[in-house]
Structure formats: C-alpha cells, structure tokens
Image (cartoon, rainbow, N blue to C red; front, side, top):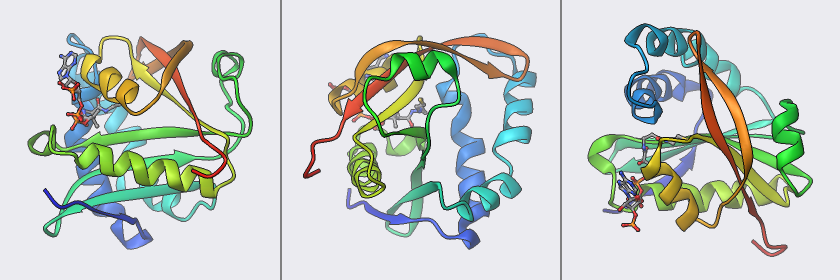
Length: 180
Ligand SMILES: CC(C)(COP(=O)(O)OP(=O)(O)OC[C@H]1O[C@@H](n2cnc3c(N)ncnc32)[C@H](O)[C@@H]1OP(=O)(O)O)[C@@H](O)C(=O)NCCC(=O)NCCS
C-alpha cells in the first residue's frame, strides 16, 4: 500500500474532522457509552476545532493519503505538558505531544500507521523536540503494541475524560536521536 504523508492545510479541516469522528471510538475501551463518545466528538473533533488547530503554529496535523483517499491522521502539539501527571512522567525536554494518531480500520496492518509515525517523528524533530510523548488508553492493546514497535516506552499513567467518563491512560515517551 503506497502511503503519501502530507501536512494538512486549513482547507482540510472538514476531511480531518470526518476521519476523526469515524476513528475515535476505536481508541475507547469497551463499555464507553455512545453518549460519551458523541459528546467527545462534538466538543473536541468538530471541523471548527480542526480549523483552529490547523491555524495554530504550535500544532502539526499530518494526513496519510493512499490513492487519493485519506487513510489516517496524526496531530503533534508543542509546548510543555499542561497535565502535572504527564509533566512528572515525561523524562526529556523539550518534548511534544503526539496528541492524535488514528488510521481508518480498513487500512490497519498495511504500514499506513508506520508511515504516519515516521513523518510525525520527523516533524517533532523539526520542531526541536528531544522526545515525543503520548497518552493511550490502558486497554488499547493494539495501539500500545504499535507504539512499542515504534520505540515508545511506558513512563507513567494519567487520566482522560471521554464525555463525563474518567478513563485510565498510560503515558508513553520516545526519545528522538539528535539526527532524527
Ligand atoms: C493505533 C493504530 C494507528 C496502529 O495502526 P495499525 O495499522 O493497526 O498498526 P500495526 O498493524 O502496524 O501494529 C499493530 C500491532 O498490534 C498487534 N495487535 C493487533 N491487535 C492486537 C491486540 N488485540 N492485542 C495486542 N496486539 C495487537 C498487531 O499484530 C501489530 O503488531 P505486530 O506488527 O507485532 O504483529 C491503529 O490501530 C488505529 O488507528 N487504531 C484505532 C485508533 C487508536 O486506537 N489510536 C490510538 C489512540 S492513542
């Protein structure tokens, strides 16, 4: 599967929001209620939110394009982690967050995620980061395996709200080599 990764532009906000709404549920543990998932999508994954993210110099959104179809996306967020649990867990500075990493289900297992990850790590290095951190639900075994394959290591835990449900994440971190 030939994957082309490119930086999203402001005019991509609609397609990124659509892919985000389609894929978010896969990252949630079983038992997350449809109401909580819908609330999260409405509040955090709306087109207007992505339009703002795409105009924000602290963020980079990358799209994976497979034969003209958007197969997935990532978002990097610069700056010191705001959550004290993350701040304590992450070892290296400066660090950036891999805040979103989502691939549509029919593209799983085809190297699309690896291409997105490679481009995301390069983008993080270009921002001057010496590490990338992320939060992943503790029950999301597939994503955890993917991140471990990608060089991330477990550093701690944090909490994450989906709607009104408080969920448990692992905090993972990957160091970036100076020439990465
Ligand atoms: C996370 C994600 C981007 C990874 O992409 P992918 O194409 O699935 O990744 P890969 O297939 O390269 O790697 C997944 C690994 O998990 C393994 N795996 C699959 N299901 C698993 C499970 N239930 N338990 C443990 N490992 C599992 C796969 O075998 C593979 O490992 P391997 O290469 O050693 O065989 C993608 O699965 C995704 O978008 N998931 C839904 C959204 C999500 O959870 N995003 C992360 C939010 S933090």
